[in-house]
Length: 172
Image 1 (spheres, rainbow, N blue to C red):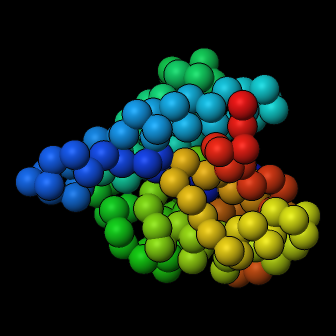
Image 2 (cartoon, helix red, strand yellow; image 1 turned 60 degrees about the vertical axis):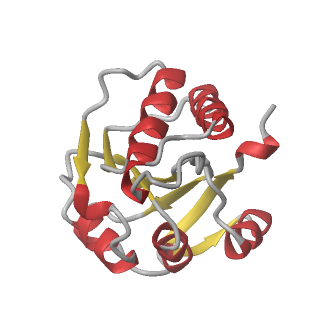
């Protein structure tokens, strides 16, 4: 069994239009949402073996805040420029290359890639979560997918069961 956490970075700041997209920081709303999602995952006793994260500033900031809220500062993290606006297929191939020693992965990336990937991987799960995921993958949201696969290389489209779809705006 493999568990995949797909986390979209928090709301970013557009205060300085001269800042390159890759270098945009989190807005205060994104900072707060990241902490909320991390606290939610901690409360649910989420166990993550490895995090894969885009090198975009807003993605790194999101991950840092989520891990702090989870009290998981020592979680192994791989920061990869290739996860920045790369397409759902590239994300899938990267997941398929993950080490099997990791039973659970957290992928922090961007839309539309993450939304496309989540929809393509989801084949079953709670109808309410599936409808919400189909409609939108908002900033700061986290989809939790379960796979019967023993190896990451065996991830198939439609094989994931959507166990949870965490929306920061619905967390108190």
